[in-house]
Length: 264
Ligand SMILES: Nc1ncnc2c1ncn2[C@@H]1O[C@H](COP(=O)(O)OP(=O)(O)O)[C@@H](O)[C@H]1O
Ligand SMILES: [Mg+2]
Image (tube, rainbow, N blue to C red):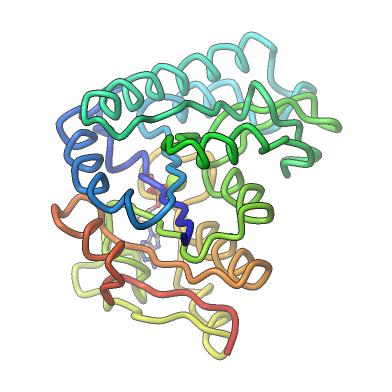
C-alpha cells in the first residue's frame, strides 16, 4: 500500500486574525473527506499551528534558542501547539479515522533546527495497526541551540526519509505557488509545475507569509518540498484546502494546485 504525508496548514484550520481560534467544522470536514481513502492509502497527517503557537513563538523568539529566548517561552509555545493539536485529535476521533497522536517535542532532538533523532518505529507500528498517525509543528529540544521550532515541513522531512511516501500533499490557504503572492496580487498566475528546469526561477517568486508565521511561508515550503522530492523520490503537491473537495481530488491523483518533482 502507498503512503502519503498530508499537511493541513495552520492557515486552514485556524482563524489567523484571532488568537487561539480553531475551526473545528473545517477540521471535521477535512477528516471526513480523507476517511474513505484510508482503505487504499496509508496516511500520516501533520498540521500547522496558525493562530496558536506562532504568536508565542514570535513573542519569545523561540526559534533562536536558549541564548535569546527563555525556557518559559518554549514551554508556553509547546503548550499552545499542543492545545490546537488536542482539538485536531478530538475532531479526528469524532469522525472515526482512528487517530494516534505523535508529538515531536516528546521524542525528537534536533541539531541547529534540523531534526537529528526521532525514532519512528512507534509511528510505523501505528500505521501497521490501521491507526492514522497525526503529528504537528512543535517546539523541539536542540543539541546546539537548546530548543528550536520544527515546522510541519521539517517534521515531514524527517518522516519522509524513513517512510518514503509516494506523495506529499501540502494543504494551505492558496491554490499553489503563484508568480507573486496571491494574497497581495489578485492577478497572480498559478504555476502548475515545478521541476529541475524552473525551480530556481520559481524560488524567486515565492515569498514569505502574509500572516504571523515563524517558519517561513511559501518560499520555505518550496525549498523543503523540492529537497524532499529529490531525496525520497516523492511527488509533492501544494493545494488549497480551504476549498471543499480538493483533498479528495488530490488523494485520487487529480491535477490541481502546484506539482513539485525534483526528478526527470
Ligand atoms: N508566490 C507565492 N505563491 C503563493 N503563496 C505565496 C507566494 N508568496 C508568498 N505566499 C504566501 O504564502 C502563504 C502560505 O504560507 P503560510 O502562511 O506559511 O501557510 P501555512 O499556514 O499553510 O503554512 C500564502 O497565504 C501567501 O500569502
Ligand atoms: Mg507556514
